[in-house]
Length: 500
Ligand code: BES
Ligand code: MN
Ligand code: ZN
Image (tube, rainbow, N blue to C red; front, side, top):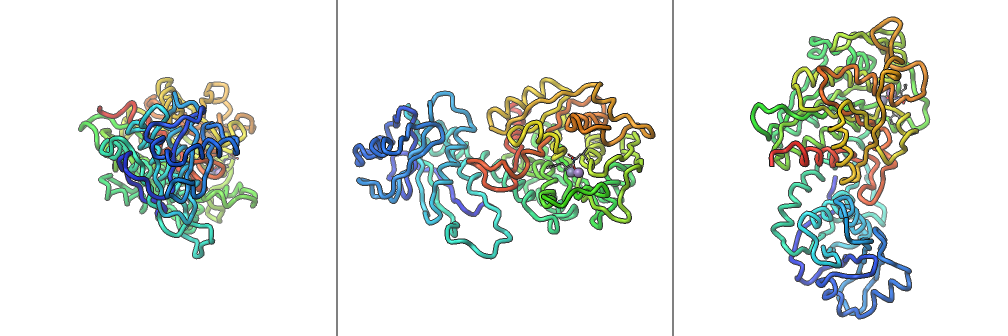
């Protein structure tokens, strides 16, 4: 839900309207158009900078109310630091800061997209605009009252650029991606009584309007093909499980697709191995992986990506019940491998086991990337900054790492190996769903998933338990649901797998 901003592009020479946003480097240098726009203020900015000890550090800012000499309500100066070697994520951040500093009462703003050495490129200005969009998101669907300091009407934000047509063209794709991020955030923020598996599947099916081919497998269909691992997780819920397959065919006919798979646990109580009460409400976000896949497919379709892509999500609810799965149960997965359930709270890997096997067998994709809020252990290891990455393919891992550095959705590679793998051998079945010890819990979870990667398909698993929701609030996100991964994977696709 991003009704807080209307974005547009204008020529950099035109008279600015509303709050004026400008950029300076760490020597307080401005570009030529900015100097011109500020000429009437004399040395006001220099004096204000001195008074505030503002040194143009990247991401720092000073605000001047009713700046003398300008007929504008407010001037915002944002530091870029050393203006050399700025990445996409930096321009996003500048846009996010600008939007964040816009008072709730302000209805208009102009951002001068210029660095000290001249106008920003179309791509850089479009990144600033995307940052504005991402920051403007707020999930207000269930608030019936607004506080006085909350925005009531959308602000009109105009980005002043040297080449309006080029900036608009560059923004079109970024707008599609921002829409995808917002879709993912909406899904994560929705309460679990509203967003149960069938409803999640309906929302994914809404991607049809963008040209995505959507198929929904219900319980009957999944029983027929043998998805015993996924179905076991959902069997204690009054809500039926679903698997949703989304296909965007923007590439060459017949070319193998890239594949994205998401864990969609609409609510994770832990099941019979029930979780403690404190913080359990957060487990409405246990579908952040699936939400990212839906947002990504929307982004690829809306920007008409020249790629064949499939998104597959397993959507379930993990509840304790008379019919729920027990510790000790043995289920047969789609792969034919039998799984001993040790802990019903290790449910995400069971869902992924079936959807990953299904995806590899049905689509023979170029690679698979799965996203899952899989383990508390990855939060212990990496906190909320990096997602954990596990991969059977160095090339894919390198590309994901690089896309992370560029977008700011960073991933840190974790190890896999036979010493970890043997910890999930079972006394009674082919494999058990948790290792004997909590040590290396994110790794043994990844080892479990790896046993369900068919045909040596290149694969990466992103454990987003620390990044999918909460604590990832920053300059371009103030929402609980972060939409993490949409920008990362869009970048992976556009950089490496799209026809140019
Ligand atoms: N959904 C949780 C993991 C999680 C925890 C995500 C906190 C986000 C924030 C997952 O299903 C789970 O319960 N994992 C267990 C595994 C354990 C039983 C082996 C965990 O991490 O404790
Ligand atoms: Mn769990
Ligand atoms: Zn879970």
